[in-house]
Amino acid sequence: MSARLDEMDRKILAELQEDAEQSLDEIARKVGSSKTPVWNRIRKMKETGVITRQAALLDPEALGLEACFFVLIRTSEHEADWQRRFLQTLRERPEVLEAHRLAGDIDYILKVRVKNARAYDTFYQALISQVKIHNVTALLSMEEIKATTALPLG
Image (cartoon, rainbow, N blue to C red; front, side, top):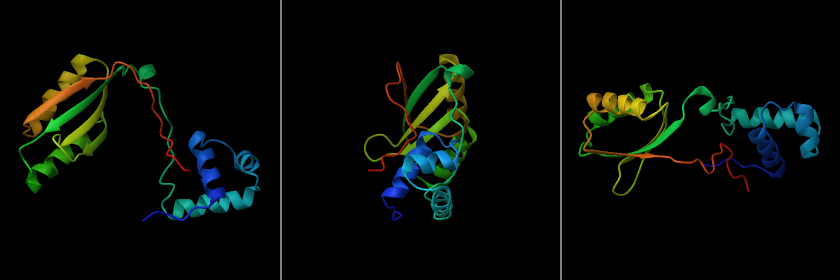
């Protein structure tokens, strides 16, 4: 169920997505309101789960994590116990930034960030030692063309 947001809420969210460190005064000025109503709207959006959390965005390359792999996984296992172990394994691996269960020929896709190909192989070996996987295909991203955490609010 989606939340009911008006134009002012959307403007506030757009500002927060751009820079959540802005002061309430800055946000209020940019959206054409005053500080208290903006604070009340932000508080309400937190309470209703529209705003789930705030986090710092880090530059992976500045931290030496230069290789981004998209990992396509096919499995012949679909039992609840296998799925539980697989999902637990993914949650425990800090290299896995995203994991999605898919419709179609591929069962799962992972976004994995590591230092290099050798570090990816270490991740891969650990993954297949913990859960049985039918087929794994790793695709190395050569260039990140677009990356954003901002959701379309239009």
